[in-house]
Length: 441
Image (cartoon, rainbow, N blue to C red; front, side, top):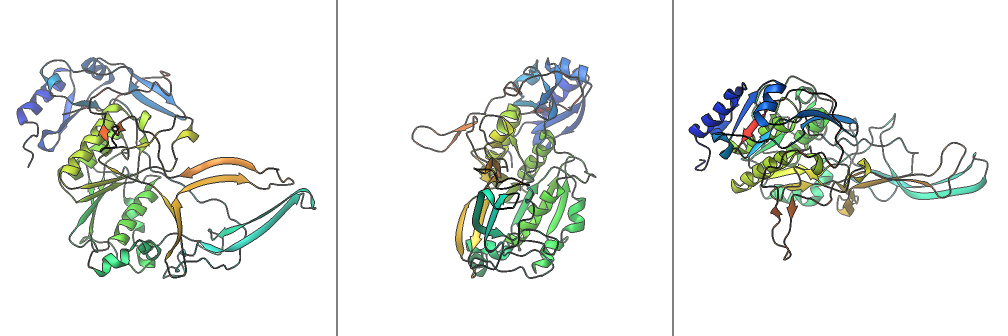
């Protein structure tokens, strides 16, 4: 299938480079697209002429090379990228709903309820409320009166509201189903970065509550690569959501959940490449990402090449745009999330959707949350305290994909390896450690 894949002889040349520098080869990728090896800090530093340090990046410590690596000898002409020298990881977006709001009255704007009263409802707007606050609640100025839609959020007596398949069918899914487009005969693959044990336990609650078929051996499989994962990650809820919604939207499709042993750039990208190279499905999705300027250039290059390869093979790649807007609340210049930044990938952001009683769309907007404090104990601030942006769909300028002046198809600029750069966030050496280097071409 791959007429231009590296040859076995070329892979052997790279293996010999590793072995000559006391690095043990642990895996040669299918079709010879990459070679992974393991070694000590000293041997890795000597092989690639780098210094491995730990750097403080906001609240995290990330291990990375201080300078660009390079490969000497015959292998140098074959290598496209060196990865695995850093300890960077992808993260799942994980926004949580806010605190309980006062109860409201029934209003005109509503949605169809879920099929089970024990589960959450699709009725997210339960009326318009008016609330009045004053200093110490004794009618002293300033007095604030606020009126607006009330959200049906989780409480002690209600599971609250949430999107369910029926409201989402407002996007003409019902019409597609009626024409026979249910995903039957298709396979969707989802890449993640942690163990699937929670999904094994919880995978039927959402689907059964909404009268959808359960997932089983005939339509669902978990694929571990390159090694098995036995962990139960803190962000496993995001994995559950990915699989459950993939089945809810395309109930006739088969789903392959591709699970690497960790959330490291190297492991996750290898899992995605496996899904593409082996043609697991014609749709691939991933609900994770990393700020583009804090992602090694070699990783951006690999992500872009994998997405481009998928496009050539007719595979659609779709990745989360993130939950942090343009990342400026994190104290970094406006940017975009990778791998959603690739011009060969569809970046998927959030949407706020309100429906009428018949499930037709009342209004919709790009998702974005802003927070203001209207009142707190003994005080009504005038004006309210504006906390600004607290979460929303990602977006921003990319340094790796640009459009030409005529507005033609975006052109990728991350087509050459430049190594990891953390200059925008500062360099603070702390200690040393070891990683598994990978050579790719």
